[in-house]
Length: 60
Image (cartoon, rainbow, N blue to C red):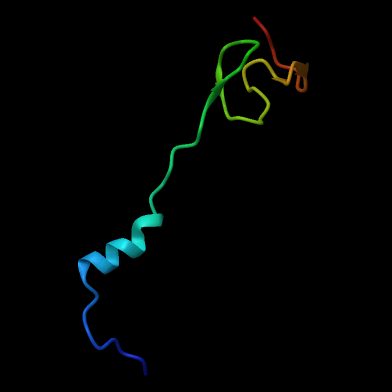
């Protein structure tokens, strides 16, 4: 059975974990309604993508 010869140092352990951090998703503003949305996604507020209405939403 494989057993490590020495204890893994804190530095070595943390270097390995350096890529595990969570990143916030980027946000952009919708040019039509000004709400924040994810890039390359349909706006949940107005239902438009690249100037075209993709989904119908209830407007007040």
